[in-house]
Image 1 (cartoon, rainbow, N blue to C red):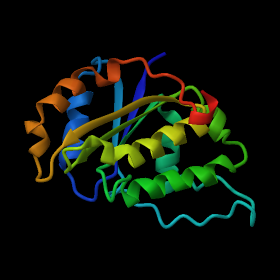
Image 2 (tube, rainbow, N blue to C red):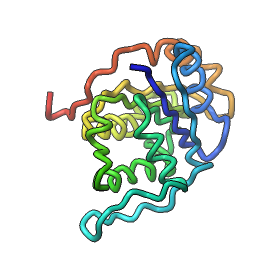
Image 3 (spheres, rainbow, N blue to C red):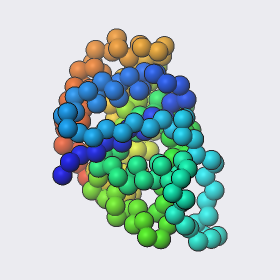
Length: 194
């Protein structure tokens, strides 16, 4: 199967450390691997309104941000959430995108969960903290989302940087980026399932 990577950039600024690290990892993908890059700041979703119990869900119109992100998500074999560490978790833009998964799960005819099952979720983040365990909430968010969806989870590529370009000085992150997408991603399982 041809792999199709969707890189979702969750930063409010372009060219930040997280995006730089994600692009370094993507450079290592085989040349025939499809890559699609979408900035959630350039394609903002409105606040998610939880209508799970209140109304019927319909597929979003063919045009517009929600349809663009839904179709890109459904088309991808590998979804890469590239979100900086904001207050120890994913950015607000990223969280809003993940909130939309709740509505897509209930949209008739999409089979959203069944479609994503077996595909792979990855994460890339830059943090301005030497102790990487502060990123555990972000890693948990992505891992548990993958587990709920019966997806594989490739882990999170962590890099250090505060000012734009700092991550290029994190030699450990750059070394990990070279093989990050080459690793075998196991099926994600909740801790109580092990």
